[in-house]
Length: 226
Image (cartoon, rainbow, N blue to C red):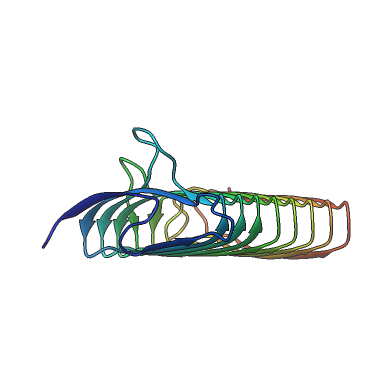
């Protein structure tokens, strides 16, 4: 199979960036592997994917990965690391000053057959997502401003689907442990302002959390496992 390795800065093949006032959109990526597909679209000002300098680029390492990123607005930043086979990642960001950090796998753990979709509409949202393992489905939708979302999934076969509607919410999710084979499951919808949610799923048994909250300034803590 053919190998490919390249670094892209600013405008390059399959990278499209535009800006009405000439403020620079920037793209710094490094890719190695087989039959990977990357499409990055940036519309607006001062948006960036990856960063300049040694080892600061967003990276893909592996086979048959597909990553699609669309950033529309001003001052949005995305940094990603994808390692493994058969991954599909889609990130759509609309608004200003949003920050997304996405890591799928690391130097010792692959990221195989993982589907991750993020849709963010609003300003000043911060998302940090770390996934390690196989056959994981991860969906996040945020509509609002100044929300903070942090998630770690290291249990294979797990599924997560989180929707946040509102402003200044803090949502933390952790899925760890070997589970019983089916993986952990999280389905959560948060509607309101200034809510704090902490969801921890762990252990050697499969756990399922279904959560819907509506209102303001609520604090919710859920811990499952053995």
